[in-house]
Figure 1 (cartoon, rainbow, N blue to C red):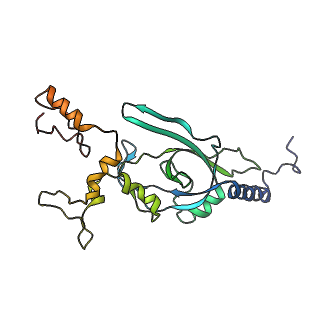
Figure 2 (cartoon, rainbow, N blue to C red):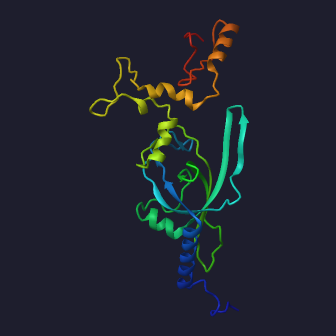
Figure 3 (cartoon, one colour):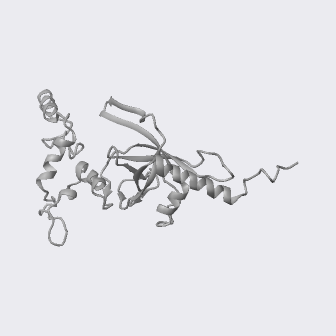
Length: 251
């Protein structure tokens, strides 16, 4: 026996296209405009499976549905040995048809939302990193797949390069970067000016960044107590180079 061909619509492309259009329209009504920011790998390490120097150079604006309607999930905010950590998680839904039109048509190498790419949520002005992509949130309705569910976690900046042209997104690098070249004094040729020993000349903004970045730091007191207890300080608490050696040059 076989299924009734009058009711089996799994091969009916018209039914599939109708459902696709309904889902796209529903997300346009109930979703939010967000930026999808693909990651460009600069120096991928195949052994560790990561890239130390990632770039984000383009942002695609289209509608995305917030599936986590009850608020952020994950571990939330908590204190760890590294200080205050925020592990907010959220799930977004993206229509396949919308992704193909807005992203894949412009860049054929991006065939689906990718782990490591970012989604900028303008409502709370935060970036979320895609950790997992579920390509079958609904299992073959009318014989096709219509959506992606992307599970994201709040993005932790670690000196990535942002050059999307969207000021509120590129501001992330200006606000949190510790790279001296981001605050370098430039010559007419857009090259950083450096001294004879290779030290890059920076603006006053670079000096004030550590104070605004980590207001809970109390490194001066820790250094003082450490020097009081031992003649040779073993730890350098310099915020720009915490592993560069002891303040007095001894080990």
